[in-house]
Length: 343
Image (tube, rainbow, N blue to C red; front, side):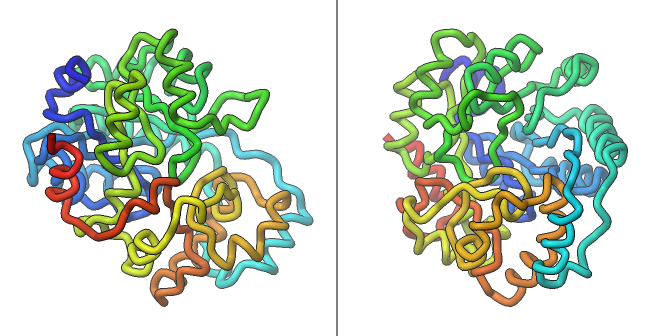
């Protein structure tokens, strides 16, 4: 852990996971950094200039290092006409959905964000869903920005190291939210965190950040003992006072057991782990008809927003990791960091 914390100039090898969707506030990010960890802004569903505003807000709140996470665009898969019609008829309030972005629009958004990250000289940038190209890596490193990739397999971790990432997040299958898988795999790329750390540690020579099911000091110490240099924690910080997650969402986090989470593609078109609710149960039989990302994500957004506004957890995406059962109360970031770092 010592080398990693020295590289980033942070006190503790604890990273708050960059969770897209609005729950991560500038206050949450700054608080994690202020108490010695690495706070993380999530730019996934944020417009470039809004991301710039959030970066500047964090800088006003803390002088400590933080990171910004970026989604690397992927080709949009073809859709079947009958599946489009199926979900058009089935999804509530779909008429309020935004236009599906074209691939070139996604790349323009991404490139604008990369430019802003250079201009703002953020301390660290992490990537999800792919590895950035050589030009992007070169330009960010010229600014002295620390680069972090996301891997779900040994092959992905090795590729990220080869391409020039300074560290890699190893996302175990226990992790809540979207899977960061980007390379084809013979299996389902759902390897548990501890096996993943063990497989990668012997062949990868950059710092490894363990993610998935880590909610307390016990699980953090276990990941570090297996060879991780730091940990990334998401669900525990969702259930914090500084989190902007809806009250009904936070209540669900306190009530759920880890066995009550499941992988689903229903909300976004990508595999993601969340607390099982009525909509997931009812639509599970239609997983094979799910539209590709980002189409399914865009089309389910009005339903999820309306459900959150109405306090209806049954139609929300309640992303959570398998460690959710160990979260028993809503704490401040200061209290969470104290629990994680006390001897």
